[in-house]
Amino acid sequence: MFFPYFDPTLIIVLPGLLLAIYAQFKVKSAFYRYSRVPSERGLTGAQAASEILRSQGLDYVDIEMIDGELTDHYDPRDKVLRLSPQVYRGTSLASLGVAAHEAGHALQHATGYTPLNIRNGLVPIANLGSTLAFPLFFLGLFFSFTLVKLGLWLFAFAVLFQLVTLPVEFNASKRAVALLEGNGFITRTEVDGTQKVLKAAALTYVAALLVSLLQLLRLLIISGVLRNSDN
View 1: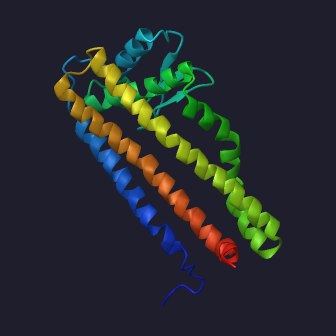
View 2: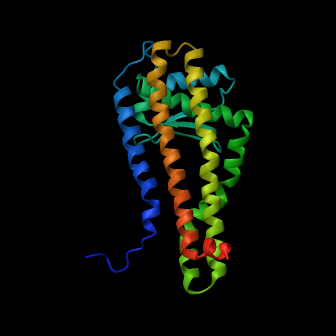
C-alpha cells in the first residue's frame, strides 16, 4: 500500500540523494584507506599545515585541535585552522592532504581569492535560505503566493552558495597538493594517494549541489512557476 500523501516529485531528488550517499561512502573509504598509509617524511598534519602557513607568510594563523572526525575547517573570522585529532596528530597521506587543504583555504583568504569572497558574502542569506525557504514555501501554498516566491528566492541563494563553493574547494585541494609536493612533504609517488582523498571529499560538494538543484526544480514544479512560464 502506498502512503496516501506520497509526493511523486520526490523522485526528482532521488538521483542527487543516491550520489550524496555514494559520495559519503567514497570520502570515508578513501580517508580510511589512506589514513593507514604513512608519509615518508613522517610529518603530522599539524606540522605540515604549520610549515605551509609559515612558507606563505601566514604565521599569524593559529592551528587548533577540535573533537570529531573529518570536522576540519578554516575559520576566517578568528584566523584559525581547526583540525580533527586524526588529522592533527596523524602522519598519513590522508592527514597531510586534509591539513594542507585547510591551509589552502587560509591562503585563499589571505590573498583575497574572489570565489571565496563571494561565498563568504553569501553566507548570511544562504543560512537564512536553508532555514526559512521550505517553511515559507509550503506556508505560501496555503496562504499567499508571495511567500512561495520568497521561499524560492531564498532557496535559490542557498543553491548559489553551494555553486560558488565548488571552485573554492577545488582550488584549495589543488593548492594543497602543490604545496605539499613543493615543500617536499610528500614524494611524487605519494601525490596520487593524496589526490584521491581530496577528490573524494570534493565529490561530497558536487553531490550537495546536485541535490539542491534538483530540490529547486522540484519546488518550481510544485509551485507551478514552470508551468505558468510556458503559458
